[in-house]
Amino acid sequence: MIALKITNIKQFMGKFLGSEAFDSFLVEEASISTYNTFMIDGRQNRDFYTCEEWEDKEIRPYEFTAWKQLRPICYSLIKGNKTPCAFKFVLYLMPEYVSSILKNGETSVLPQQIQALALTIKYDGTTLTLITGTAFHTFVMDKTVDGLWDNAVRQFLYKREIGYEEL
Image 1 (cartoon, helix red, strand yellow):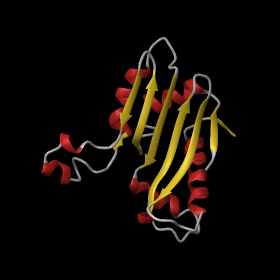
Image 2 (cartoon, one colour):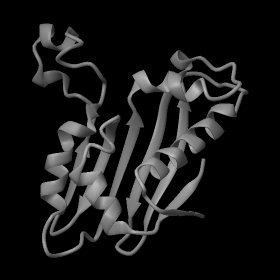
Image 3 (tube, one colour):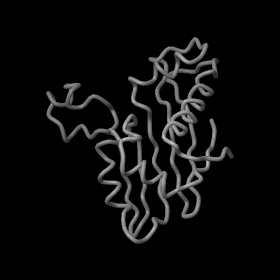
Image 4 (cartoon, one colour):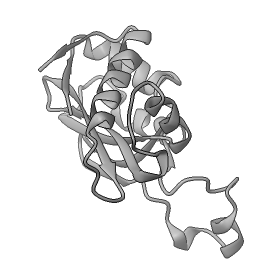
C-alpha cells in the first residue's frame, strides 16, 4: 500500500472527470461533499433488474458499476465555480486487467484469488491523495501483489502525465 499526493489537482480532476483515463475501474463507493453530501453505493442494485437482466453478463458484467457510467453524474455534482469541500472515491480495477498486473512479477497468486486491486482517491479541501490497496478472497502469504499493484499505479499515473509525490 502506498499513498501518493497529487501535485496538480486541477489537471488530475480534468483527466479523472473529463476523460476516459480511469475507465478501466469500477466504483465501489463515492462520497462528494458540496452544498450537500452525495453518497453513491457502486454495488449493482438487484431490485432494479429482471431475473434475466441480472444473469445477463452483457447487461450487468460486474458486481460494481463502471466508472465510465458514473463519471458524468459525478462530474455534474463537482463542476461549478466552487471547489468541493471533500470527496472520496473507492475504485477497483476491472477484473479483466488483473492478469496483466500479475504477469509483471513473480507471484504464486492467481487472478481468481484477488477480490480487488483498489485505488482510493481522497480530497479534503486542500490535498488530493491516492491510496492503493489489495483485497483477497482468502488469506495469502505472498505479498508480491501489493508491490505489483503499487508499481502499476505509478506507471498508470506516469503514462497519463499525472504528477505526484510519495507520502
